[in-house]
Every structure is written in structure tokens, then in C-alpha cells.
Length: 389
Image (cartoon, rainbow, N blue to C red; front, top):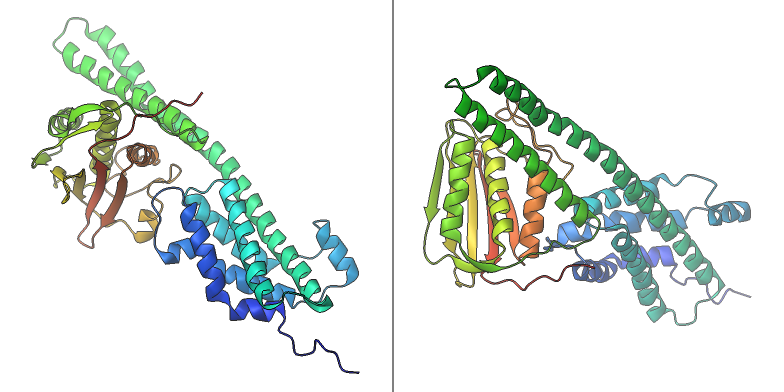
């Protein structure tokens, strides 16, 4: 007697034949849960196709009853294709700001999408198809396990690297304070006193900025949304003040302010000042000494928002660096910056969080000519934040 189920489409074949339909469901879920501004389809889908392909290939691999038991207990053979695809996906999602719950939720959505689409064509699966579903769930579980492990390892590594860099970066201003205080004591009432005092003040301000950034990043990484307290602000006036401070701290550099139109709005003045100062400092670090750092302020086309641009010329920033520039653990090195303390990305990460708290957008582009432009768009009004309790 012939098998009535012979010739039925196996789940692995079904997955490979319906990749686009599964990807549409995956992308829809990812877009609805994306932390921040959603990128294009390529970035959202990531390497999900590679994961599905690895799942289908794994399902076709023969497993004995003992191997199935070992797998259910988290032991047994290795799964290089599944692990490689999951590891790459996890790493890229981490850089996009996904927390571990969002990462796991994506796999839950993938699992549900495949099973739903599959069941629509197979309302009463027979024994072989039930076995296929079991193998499919096991493969997805392997993806989840590898992704969670990768996420946890990155968080732990980040914690160690983060604290190590903080300790290293704080040594320089602290050392400057000690040396300059000693010089101040030796100088007494000499004419060197005012310049030395100014340098001490700059070092102290540098340390204060680091500490504030550390507090901000610690809070936001723990899931606490940055609070903002809007008030009426003239962005032209604020931008001019921040630019003067940047000129005072970097007398050897050239700065230019371009301000056009009505730039009044309801924003958190302290946060906006921090945003501008961090963007200008980043531009100073990575611009060539001969080129000016420009701060350009103007209303948006619809006049509902304002645009802030900070532009400098130096070396072109590679695309792979641009993609992770706002990550707090990335250190951007350039020929021009090697003679000065390198930032580890704290300032730019804080910029992103400030813009996000103001319901705005921030982006960066770098041309072949080495012109790098940070662009911020923020609405003229922002709701008052409610502090977490």
C-alpha cells in the first residue's frame, strides 16, 4: 500500500520556497520594535535569510534518537552553520541597540511566522510533518541560545572595556590638575598665575564632562529614558555661547557659526548645550588643523523643526565606522586625532540619546573629500518628561 503522504512538501523545502513571505513578517515585527530610527530593509532583515537557510539545512541532517535527546538537553554535536548565522545576527542587533528581550522576541516572531504560514497550507499535519516541526523548533532554539550567549558575552566584555577606558581617560586630566597645581604653588604671584588657573579650570571641566557622560550612559544603558525639561530657547544665542566656549578651549582652531531664520523652540537648554558641545568636540578631534569647524543652524523646510549641522574636513570616515559611530564602545582613530586624546564614543552616544529624548533624528555622512557632517533635526517643542520612580 502506498504512503498517502508521499510527495508532500517537507517543512525545510517549504521554508526555502517561501523565504520572502517569511521575511515580510520578520521585517514587519522588527520595524514595530526597533529601538530608535528604523533603517532600510537590508539592515532590518540583517542576515535572517542566512539563518533560515541554516535552519532548513539543519532539518535535513539526520539525527538519531540519542542525538535528539542530547540536543534537547543542550549537549551533543556542534551546529556551526546555525551558530555562525545567529552570532552575526546578534552582534549586528547589539550595535543597533537591541536589548536581550527584543532579540529573543525576534526569534519568537520568526518561529510563529513560519508555523502560521506552514499551517495555513497544512491544517492537519501528518506524522512526518510533525517531526519536521519538532526539528524546526530545535533549530530555532539553537539560534536563540547562541544569540543570547553572544549578547551576554558582549555586555560583559563591554562592561570591562568600558570601565577600563574610563579609568585610562580620567588619568590625563587628573595628572594635569596635579602638575598645574604644583606649578601654581611654585609660581606664587607671578604673571603665569592666570594662564595656569585657566588650564586647571579646563581640566576640571573635562573631568566633569566625563563624569556626566558616564552617569548618562549608565542610566540609558539600564533602560531609563533620558529626562528633559523644556524651556523657551533661542538656538542662535545658545549656539553662539557654545561656539565661544569651544574657541576658548581650542584657541588654535578656527570656528564658524552660520545661523539663519527663526530658531526659537521649547527644549532642554542644558541638554542642547551638551549636544552642541559634544558634536563640536568630536569635529575638533577629527578635523584637519587647517580647516574650520562649522556650526550651521536653520529652520526645517516645514518650519516645524530646526536643523543643526556640524561640519568639518579631515579624512573620510569609512562606512563600517559610520555604522557604529554612536556606539559607546567604539573608538574612532584618525591621523589628525592621534596627537590628541581619542574619544571612546561616549560623547556621540550621549548626543544620540539627547536627540532621541527630544523626539528628533541624528545622522552623519562623510564624503570622499573628507567632509564629515553631523545633522540633527529636532521639533520646536518636546513633551515634558516624567522621571522614573
